[in-house]
Length: 433
Image (cartoon, rainbow, N blue to C red; front, side):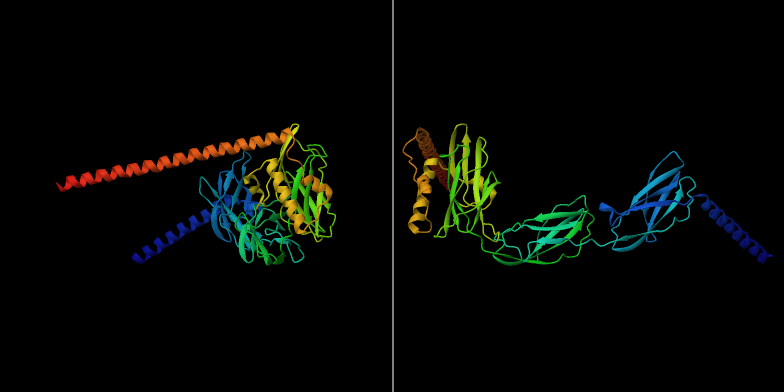
């Protein structure tokens, strides 16, 4: 009897389980499986694709990547009975082929649908950038040569010089899908052979393989020209003559306000040093102007900047201010001291006389006339000299006041120390008593 009871009990349990199983299967069939519409791998979605699709109303969507649950999709509720969903894969996927599928879950009954169709996609490797210059054919004496190349869109490029990471570009984009880039090393390179290569990286952190290694040679820089004078006489005050010296067989480039204004070949001289003169082709507007020059040899190697000349056009008056030193870079121009036209004339005469006495350059008669202009006449030059003397007097007065103030501070410190020593001695006496 007991055995019969146990038999019927087990049979009942099996029948109940079977009923629940069949009910669950039939219930699952009531929830329609979602449909994956697209896998977007554009831009930042290359290694974390954006999955979009459709699902029945009042359902949640579970996303599975490579057979493993990755997360729940975001649902956009529509009024048509079918909602759309989107989901960006959380993990950074490695290169290769991957699968994605989805399940729908009814929010009320919590019933699950069947898996959607399995969709495949591929994570491709990031292409390496292409370096263009400098290479073995590059002729340069610049200690910071510009490095140029090409890379795919939405990447930035890491630059390696002589095997060490030198810096990187910003994110690069172009309508064609391939962006060009240029990079200037942040440290000066020495004369001699160097190597450069690059890697690309995207926003998701994928890094490409190394580009081809380029070798290039930095030569000794070409001697810079000397701008001797910027003189308005013989032309309009706002179109001054720019005169100077340079090596033979060079092309001179004149820059005004950091923009190329003109270029020309020098007339060679037997001494090996030629003089040049240049007249701007457009009138300079009123205000302060920066003038300098560079030289190029027959192979195209460019020199460093010449000395910087400041030229002021103020209405019908003008003033010339010169710097007789070679700046380290463009930012250094603003930090140099300025001198008056009188001091400029004296320094220019010294340069011209030394050049002539040493035999390094033979200056033309016209250039001698410019160098040896008479500074003792003219009300405008006299006014500039008076202003210079007045400024020097003010500087001397300020220096005297500062020295007096400094001595007063030192005296006050000595007096305070003496008082402190006295107080300490009296305190010691009282302690002994």
